[in-house]
Every structure is written in structure tokens, then in C-alpha cells.
Length: 165
Picture (cartoon, one colour):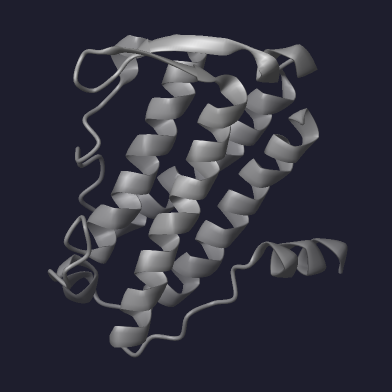
């Protein structure tokens, strides 16, 4: 299970980098235009992926004071946001390599955003991190289609093929 999540963190970094290649062809105005995404625009949706990934790493580390609101904005500048996202997934991968296999089976308690005490297995928290990023990259990819920007192939099998070549 440990190796699975380490690879997933690497995949998330790779898929984000692939998406950013397409998003770089958009102007700041296009990335920040309200196009009816849940977080209104492409930039804020990418920022949200970063917020949630950092929040979950903090929860899993027991660092509850580091948690930000899910709609917080961390980076206003695209050229700062991109490397922050890529670095977060690289750091997550490194952090996971330092964990013992039994850690992934543990259950953590954390305060929910509404203050309610919640419990989740480390495994399920990590699954949420990975699927959350995929979910929002999918929304952004749909937006790329509407904006006439090529959408990259970001499926896991493409990651594996490129990794093997």
C-alpha cells in the first residue's frame, strides 16, 4: 500500500505538469475568467487542489493549525502557483517514503471544517487527496475544451508508459 501511494503522489505531480503545459497557452485573463467552475475559474480551481492537498497532509501529520479554508486563495500569480502545486506533490511523495507501512493502516482524528471531530483511516485520507486532484483536473480539462485549448492525456496508463520509456 505504501508503494501505491508513493506512486500516486508522483502521478499527481506528473499529471499536473501535463495540464499546466496546456494552461500555459491561456492568458491570465482566460485562466481567471469566471467560466462556471465550482471555484469559478481555472486559476482558483488549481489553487483549490493545492489547498486541499496541503490540508490533508497537515491533517495526516497532526498539524491542525496549518489547515486553511477549502476556498482559500494561496497564490494570485500563475507563475507562483504552478511550481507550488508541483512541489507539493513532490514533497508528498518524499514524505510518504518516510512512513512505515503500518502507518497507512492507522486511523486519525481531526477537526472537520465545521469543528466536528472526524475519524478517517490514513489510507482513505490519501485516496481522497488523489481522487480529489483528479476530479478537479477533469473539470479544468473540460474548461480547456470550451476555451479551445488542447487537453493533455493525463490518464494513469499514459503516466506509466512515459515512465517506462
